[in-house]
Amino acid sequence: MTSESPSQINANEFGEDTTQTGVAQNNVAENTATPNGDNDVPSNSDNPVDSSKLVEMTTEIESLKTQLEERSSQYMRIAADFENYRKRTQKEKEELDVQVKRNTITELLAVVDNFERARAQIKPQNDGELNIHKSYQGVYKLLVDSLKRLGVAPMRPEGQPFDPNLHEAVMREPTDEHPEGTVLEELIRGYYLGERVLRHAMVKVAAPPEDASSVEEESQPAEDNG
Image 1 (tube, helix red, strand yellow):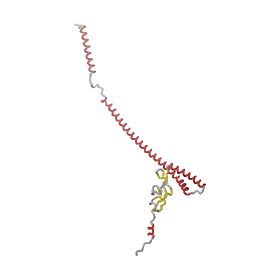
Image 2 (image 1 turned 135 degrees about the horizontal axis):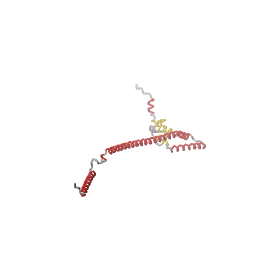
Image 3 (image 1 turned 45 degrees about the vertical axis):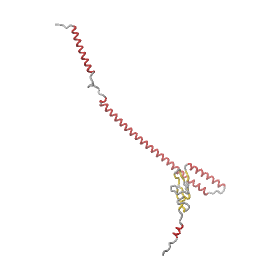
Image 4 (image 1 turned 90 degrees about the vertical axis):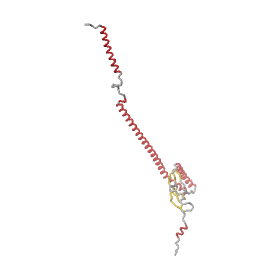
């Protein structure tokens, strides 16, 4: 029975080790050099979870845009309504102030009328009466000046055409010296408050003169043609 030499045994062992090492290296190379295959991780674009999130976020953004537009429109409407309300209340306040002023001044006009009647009718006969006359006329002047500062101005209708928006005709006088409808006399003075009529003037208006010949013809009996 022949026995193997030590050199042969060592050679066989080395050969087996070399073969096993080569097989292991080949397996590692195959595992590491495998191109994109079944074991590859899918990209984000192919992930259905990310796509659904993107759609959800897009929908939410569109919803927020719609809500923002609605809130903006609502704000504009509220701002416009408030501005209209402010202008309306301001106008109502101004009209109320004017009405209160008109009512107050109208009550004072009766006092002015009495002062003017007294000035026209009372004729002082002595120094005492003259002093009294000057005293109440001073009060009258003070009252008139106060009304002027408030924007009150008297009308001067004499010689002007009758205007129903300014005047109230209480008398008519036939005359051929003035055209028909001319204001001959202001019986009770009218006043303006700013550009508005505070009180209409009561006036006497010219009427056409009566035709004397026509009156005589109407008064004579008709001739008998028979």
